[in-house]
Image 1 (cartoon, rainbow, N blue to C red):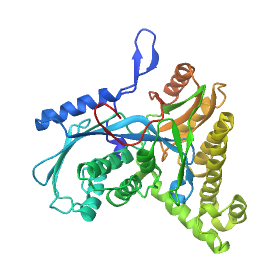
Image 2 (image 1 turned 90 degrees about the vertical axis):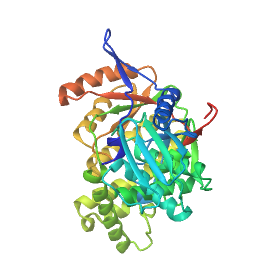
Image 3 (image 1 turned 90 degrees about the horizontal axis):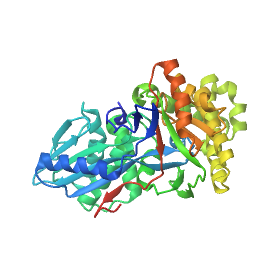
Image 4 (image 1 turned 60 degrees about the vertical axis):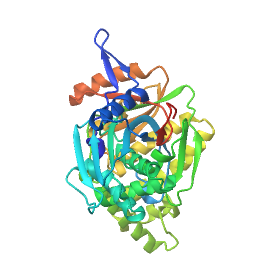
Length: 419
């Protein structure tokens, strides 16, 4: 189970009982930090030495290509996991998931292995690597809490991994680079959780900048920032309230399918090393050899890698109409070719396609639930939510949630009330 399905996020939408309208409730950093710090003090009778905030992420475009050597365009957002942490005087470690009211304890002298407490594995996987490379021996106490909505595809798992890596780097002066912290987080998910994720989520969580999106080369880890000034538009997430887990939803199966497809492509085109070297013509020529399913997977990957390049050009030119069109094209590929959407997300995307205030919409994240990401005109969000939520409830009997997000800094230490 993904940590996004475990960590209880703070509710982002409140209902005005007099008007029955949905209003965005922005949970400030202070309102996250203060109760987390106070809970730490209550449990350990001292103030935490450090406070860290590690953000969730969105991905503007470039889905399911981070593990296919493609390009992605993520950004950190203003929803966080907050960590309150201090060293202690022995080798015992206490992890307190405040929102779950759960505790996991272990000793650094013992061998660290995956456990039944799934959320703890994201942390243990990071600590296991640091113990092997830096000989961690001194224990610590951590309380963490989150405003990242649960199961919404905003990568609270990467926020947890990178927040722990960043905290350990500071706490024990390990000298890790941001890139190393991201890679450690990714490896933790591979080894202790069993999800063969790409690097995008962890990279965005660590490298995020306020009002910037990152075009990341998932092959070389080279990256560049693009100004995320959407002018009269904003990013609106519509949460299907359908919760997913990559372990049971087919994430690893998709990886196996595209790996098989790439092997077939290489046999016929020896110059191809990765999907980066492929073009649509190559994939179309091998349709029969690939077979129906693997052809669809590979065709999506090749087209999506190109769409990221096109989106970067659109952002550079402030061509938001083109960006929206590319987002919508991505969803069709995710739904029909990569087949990682679901009927609820397809409904949310289809429902806004003919709204004049919406430039583009698509499924975001690993799939099989979570959120759609929508590029919409500022000031029209509530009317759109009201229209869609009623239809969504009538169709599926599920309450729609919505989050208007801003692009934020990456994982950061909170110090002297300044981030």
